[in-house]
Image (tube, rainbow, N blue to C red; front, side, top):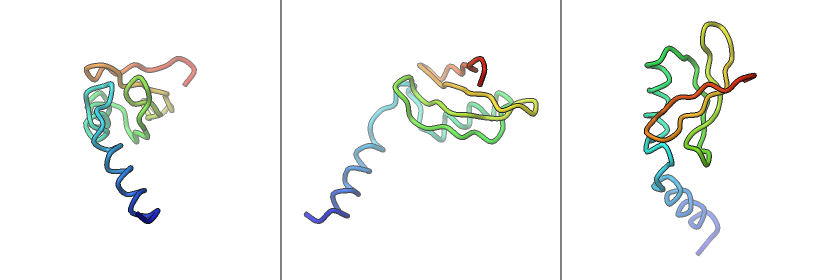
Length: 76
């Protein structure tokens, strides 16, 4: 098997793995937008998804955890 095909197979397997939040990345981003955050930049983490989003003009570190709970982190 060539390396490109192996990489594609691994990528597809990673995309199908369930996230700890129970949401897809698109659903997690939509949840942030629904709660008034803008410009979400998040990625998978052991907790679910973590990254940054803007709210009231400030860049805030956020975690989307179990059942889609959004938690802003202090000092983001």
